[in-house]
Image (cartoon, rainbow, N blue to C red; front, side):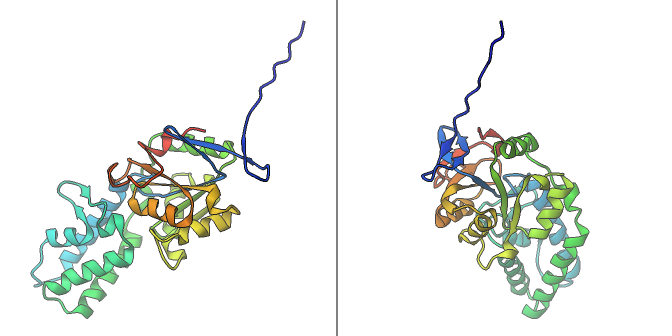
Length: 266
């Protein structure tokens, strides 16, 4: 006698009857077709990459400023980092701001210590530009444990995936390609591709446009309050992760908070 086994898979559907994958984070479920993921602190270890970069920038500045009375602590404070404690201020320019804001903070610190504003601006721009090629971004990138398997499963369940990062788009592509993770993403949106970066909705809206989904059918996942605000401003769902630099209290505006992106269930 032969038996026929039938597996029934139930999918959530939108109002038009299209199948939409179901994403679960903690006890909350999202009917969505796209997942928009922050990069640093969400996909990759934030501290290893950006604290090493911060150390390079500060050391280069200190080696060039000559007689200007300034110490490393002043530059660390301007960037929102503590290199001795290897910590990042989640609300500081590095983690919670933009590259432009960080550049301005460094320029103002140098100018406040006696350098002319013009000289300070020229030096900061030079050091930041040099850091682009001097840093081995691929070698500094560390994915969250279990990340590739999770991305594979999300794609297997037909989720459209995008990266939405305050970093530059091209640098993000280089980093993800070095880790062989770029293949899982349908688009990579950097702050340089939009007029207004997080917490404005521009990156989320651009990602949704490229993915061909409405913002309401997308969920933003990130480790920063700015990620959560971007999601809210775009009209998308939001998931906060504790794998980056922010605490649960700082991510309290999210629809749900989980330890890491690898804790997602489909």
